[in-house]
Image (cartoon, rainbow, N blue to C red):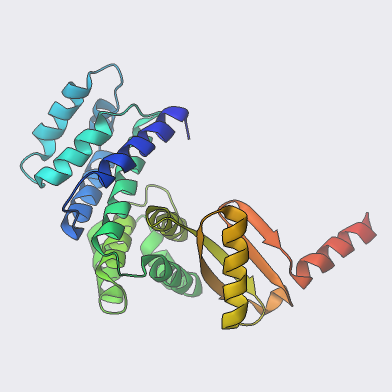
Length: 263
């Protein structure tokens, strides 16, 4: 990610924070805008063209989207195109991230991070479902409708909105990659960090509480746990936070010992 995109995302997050009346309708409209821009290289190029003035780019937004989305959505997209992005694809990613954050804001009581993680595990355990959602041959609308049937009821409206929108426009990304990124964005919006914990047996409540306390102290932020039970780790834990991996499992120590003996 280029420095221009990093700064643009920070500015866009601040613009969202300053916007009132964020609803799931706004989140859905932002996803739709991101999808439309992503499907047109001409449109995305025009909106990310740093040679054009910000007002000119905002004029394109008004011409294309002004009559089809709310004033709140137009204002947020205006904020997005006013920024300088490292690439047109980064602009699309930025608006999509904005949509995920908006969905998290719209339903503050929903456990969106956990629901995204649980659905990711469902996809991982069902190759046919992963193929159906990830196939280039399927209609985008049909994939979105499938998600709505699967998640309406068991999951919150925010989670359903996020997942159904993402599978409609994967842009060469795998479904589980989309869900993982969305979960991290939601956690960040809520001032938390997601830790994925793999253990041989389910963690007891007291163990989970101690682990949360230790990780929160280490990373200086509230931590939420996504837990996976995997007997192949033998014992101990493997913890991943973003790109950091803490592997204290017995299987890892055995693998390390085998490597040393072989070397």
